[in-house]
Length: 110
Image 1: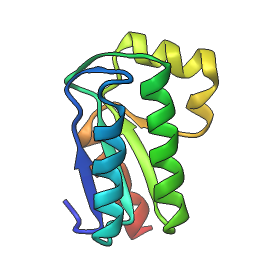
Image 2 (image 1 turned 120 degrees about the vertical axis):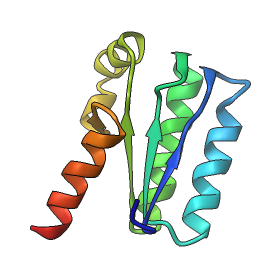
Image 3 (image 1 turned 45 degrees about the horizontal axis):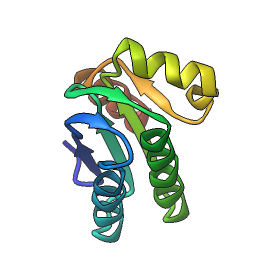
Image 4 (image 1 turned 60 degrees about the vertical axis):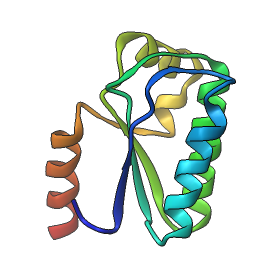
């Protein structure tokens, strides 16, 4: 993967007890000079509003440094949460990491 990208893979339930970990990981990547962060939800079984709030905060952090935050591998529950809260308007959602890599490489070379 391009060094300008970082992948973060939360595990389990992304709620109030896990939200700080997500924010810390994205902040660390941004401070290290990574401008684009992919959050892979493949190992997340459930996300509540606290987790969504953390994700929005992480997006703001990435954008404040001139980058962006993307998501992939969302399950049905997370997809529905995105739709109900209109979060899908703010996040570019990819099917999986391969989809992300293919589309971002194509976009970068266009």
